[in-house]
Length: 389
Image (cartoon, rainbow, N blue to C red):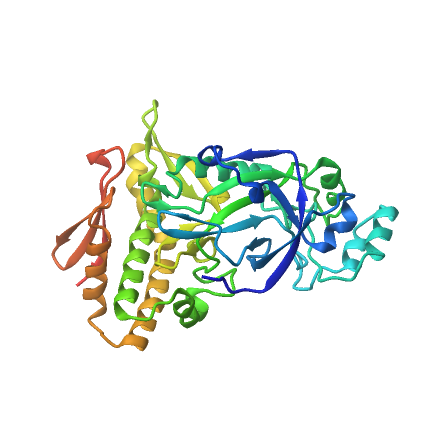
């Protein structure tokens, strides 16, 4: 499958400093050990590119190769780079151009290089502190290190059913190049190391934001792209969406750890969301991609049930909204309609038959999720009403 999106050609550079995910250390993956930079960044370095590579844009600072790189467990994955620069001013909707960049610089030599460079579509990495741990348009080592730790927790793409797009390598920008970039800032200079993440993603289709193809925005084109041309395929897509979506909603209990002081730890979401920070594979499985937004939190035993509820409610509407868009498109194409609650319950039961954490119980007119945990701590089990009949 060839991914759709705005085409983007990036120059390819060698670099000597990188960190490798423990799951990929035995493999030769030269493509993942390069820097990928837009032509507009040429004035900031004396390095000569090895060539260029074709991508499609992804989010505001990422790119994905349009053709698959390798297959994992039957799913095609695409080479992805995070931290390639942004096209837009961080404080307006205007494009970043030469004039804007030069107005921020006091280095006359660098200004002259930019002014005299070839006129190309502008895209810049900057030294403006952004999102606590990263520069605007780029990626910071702090965030990339968090992504690597999470990725190494996984069995390649799964943390007890919570699916991730694996980070393969953290690639460092050379320090002289980095120092030139840090001369571009509006208010606050980023002080850490600037890196790129080279990753594997199953597509560039997001739930609602940060992609040209989304379930919320153009579900019809998503069906076409993924080849969902029968009712059975659509139902299987929905089942996989539900299975991975429930895992997303219950990440805390899937990573639960018992601490010596009687508290419990688990992964939670920080400033990341289902609608913009996850992508879909062609079979409907949700893969979380922006791993930097996962963090360990500590919770007292009496607060575990509250945290389970909070995490579910945080993304439940986004999950159900996307489910509805998929179901509506299925019905529009293939007919075959049953009561929405009956069908959702059927898909839940089918999707979670062998789930490691979640079971079901019927109480009165409600179907409830029985949310356990990987520690098998019965006292921490929580019931959550998911369908009222």
